[in-house]
Length: 127
Image (cartoon, rainbow, N blue to C red):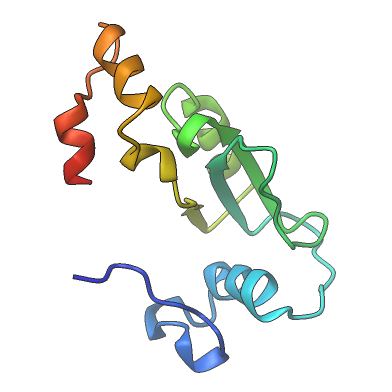
């Protein structure tokens, strides 16, 4: 089952996301919508800390939390702040492709030899 839906035009945005900050994010990022002026953040974006990834969003549009794999665990205060004080109405978790997950070389060896990780090479092959 294909889980990703490419957004290449306005009609590609699912109806449940229309007239929400998620629609605005998709329009800025995927459709090159000209940046609007935002007085305050409208959403929280969680994304990977990969320095090669950047977003095309205007100032004040979103709180952006970067962490390994976009994991928001241990960021409870930051998320709570964005909701309670910042008044955001949506949270977007962004992911990018991870070719290393399918590697049979060094990543498999690292996981096998690091007991603190809970993944196994066989579970990675199933992803």
